[in-house]
Image 1 (cartoon, rainbow, N blue to C red):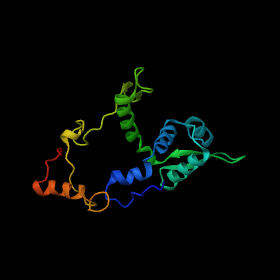
Image 2 (image 1 turned 45 degrees about the vertical axis):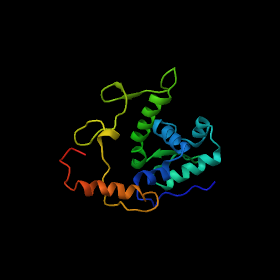
Image 3 (image 1 turned 180 degrees about the vertical axis):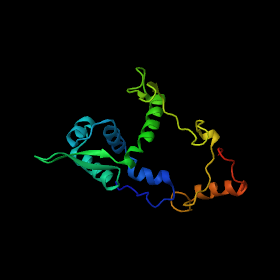
Image 4 (image 1 turned 135 degrees about the vertical axis):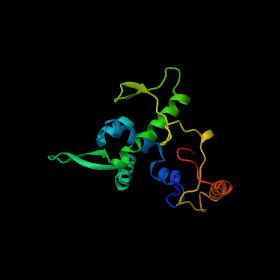
Length: 178
């Protein structure tokens, strides 16, 4: 089955999932960010075919999410290291983990915990407003048009819906809200 590319859709979620939207890529990034960085170790941990793993790793390197760094010269060996772009996927993985822990952990509980090293507490990730630090939910946020928005494939209905919200309330939101 051929996958439809989403890179031309005027939506950051579509563009991000075009690179990051399959389960193997998310699990590869989980492993690399937690410390499993060598090809053979990734293949063993994930139980993934070497062909699929090589393709996913090549795409992540091509996209600048991972880089290959030599750790041994003779014979030459390399490992995969997250770039700044790759490290910034960590909060996305934590959000998926928190959602999975809530809805799919099972009777034994979550399979892993997250400790915030700065304070030493085991924590649950929260998506928060950059201005007031309050948690963000679907009930208390509104999507408004951005400068790169347009109507087209993937946004034929969404684009006009979002644009209508700004047209209905043209006043700028106060600092720290919306």
